[in-house]
Length: 317
Ligand SMILES: NC(=O)c1ccc[n+]([C@@H]2O[C@H](COP(=O)([O-])OP(=O)(O)OC[C@H]3O[C@@H](n4cnc5c(N)ncnc54)[C@H](OP(=O)(O)O)[C@@H]3O)[C@@H](O)[C@H]2O)c1
Image 1 (cartoon, rainbow, N blue to C red):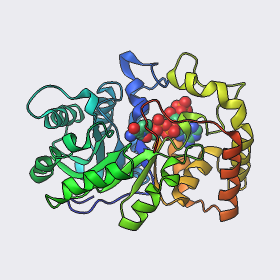
Image 2: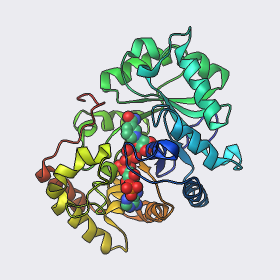
Image 3: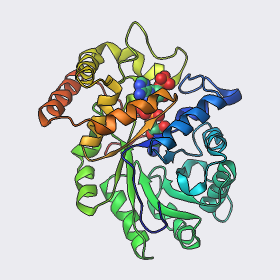
Image 4: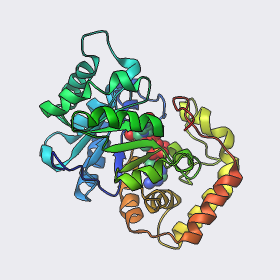
């Protein structure tokens, strides 16, 4: 990644669950992650060309950024790219809350710049977009993206940045077989038309679309994701079975098919990786080409499941 062109790998790596690790583990994801396990994820990802890491101050209130920085220690800073977020709801009351939160993120990750800095949500676009401009000018951030923004909000952020010669260089929204609001709202088309990379998050619906979890083997009890998905896993069975079958034809898994679907839709999936073995799935997914008929069949099965997986933090698009 250079400072003037945002280069985007086929798949980006998500680390929300990494905020679960450490002393305060077993929170949102109920995942048991160890420092050495995460180091293994990093080693395998980088050696396979997956170099873009997505995190946020909000993930484990800094623990994800810290764990990511530690896991990347020793690698040349130019061999990977960091993507983190300004979360308006966490803004302090200093003169420049955006710069303050950025500095704290940089400190936790042990670096002096962020490759891709996101406004986490559209709480107040007119207020939170302008403070990004001096950070772009100083090189503390190389590129700016907006997350959980609708079309009008993307356009407003773009206008504000445009006045200073910058632009919204990436969009990040929830986009999965089960949740295609950004496609229906025209955001995917907008990004295609303006050559703005669209990053899709929760492509695997936090594990519910991997085929690994089902009513007999639900998501970890007591975790927030279990509360969201365990009650609907039975409705996803026909879809995940078909994804599993399409995967088996290609020596791949249901999860790989979900990732390949997001790539086929012209997006860059951000996949939450918790185990080194999951990197093998990304290598397979990146090579899978789904046919139009397969895509249509999967989307029809997803529609039949009729579950609404919009996150509590998301607005209608
Ligand atoms: N901008 C935003 O508001 C926003 C919101 C949500 C997420 N995000 C970003 O998007 C990333 C992805 O979302 P997410 O992590 O919430 O969920 P996700 O990618 O939909 O699912 C991740 C979970 O799926 C399982 N998994 C991953 N790869 C697998 C594989 N190959 N085979 C089987 N299971 C697999 C893991 O669960 P187990 O560990 O249980 O196996 C993992 O925790 C986040 O990490 C974050 O960076 C952004």
